[in-house]
Amino acid sequence: MGPLLKDDALVRTRRTWLFACIVLAVAGLPPLIFAVFHAIAGHPVSWAAFPGPYGALFGLVRAWNRWWREDRGRVRADETGLWLGERCVIPRASIRHGYVLEREGQWYVRLGRMLRLVDVEVTDKAAGEALLTAMRLDAAHSVAEYPMTNGTFRGSFVRAGLFVVPLVLAPVVVHLSSRSLATFALAMLAATTK
Picture 1 (cartoon, rainbow, N blue to C red):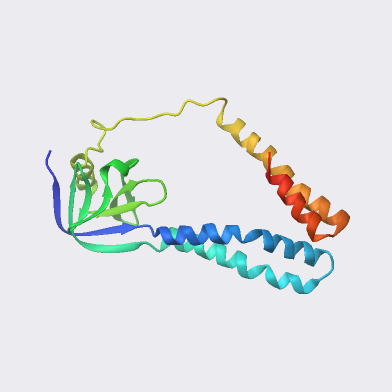
Picture 2 (cartoon, rainbow, N blue to C red):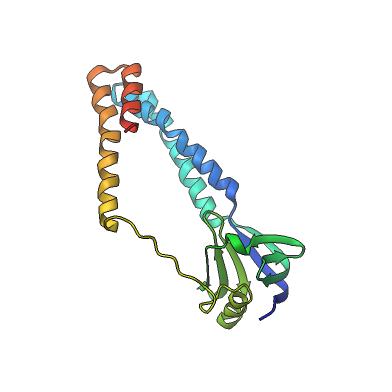
């Protein structure tokens, strides 16, 4: 099958700069944790530092999930990727999966890569499957990949939980016993290293 052309289509893309802001907000959580410990130690004014950063973090996550970039124009889908006019929205080599989905009465083709999903509005399920076929993402041309790992999925959660327990408990115990910023920082460093 040749390329699929559509004169007027809506292409929605996740904004990666919002994800970068989320990463920066998460990097700012250790000072916030210290402020909470300071408030527990008897300085109630430190509680004022708590709602702002957490509200910003949750707001950024919500914006990243809901505030997509929307472009409308001539769409071409072929073996090289998805094109909007003369601009390549997503190259075929970087697409990890593609499928048709229906949301709120509208049909979309979702093309995925690690952090930047792309949705293309289509008229119905058949049009979505035609777009996937044009990009050679349909079942006849797709290759499934399955990772071979040690253990089970549940075991990986147990190992992750066992790693997080010292990370959470060590700084709390050290801070409550010595109430010193230097020992708190050393405990955080020791808990995060293996």
